[in-house]
Image (cartoon, rainbow, N blue to C red; front, top):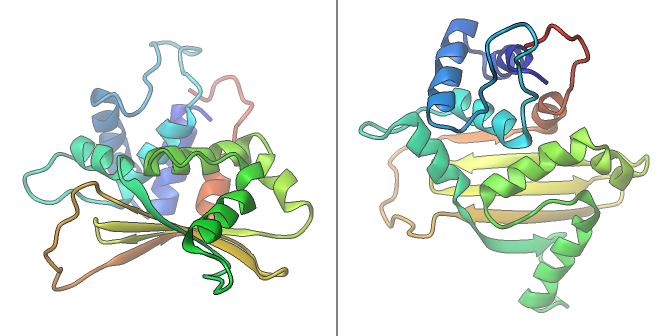
Length: 206
């Protein structure tokens, strides 16, 4: 996927005008969160997993007053894994064994849990390389990411037909104790990652 297709894809997913998407795209490039190619017909670079995720986040969320969009997305990406559970909490398993089972459930997908950014990049990457499809093995699976304001993010992977699922929660290192009066929850469904993983073949898509 080159820059133009990514802009069009994110614009559609986030229901933003293409001009607004392009402005935010340039802002992310200036902050080195999206790759920048060279001028010319064939100067476009293939967007990395991180480029695609960052473009989506930049067009889905608005930073609070006083914080730049680049800083806001960087903060999201640094959220650390704070909790993991499998299908759901199984009473016969210790919390450590339950977390281990959650990681084993998604091991073949190839998601890295260093932080939220790596996890989201990994989902896109697994779909670009067909690792996610191979893991499904013909049994449809769902993946969703819930953003609870800007203080807690939950990644869910489940196979409804077999009643297997895992959840992973990410939070900032220094979580705020203040409770929001109104909390908005945003969910990214599987179709988001499916579309971010698309690669076009046309040579002039730069």
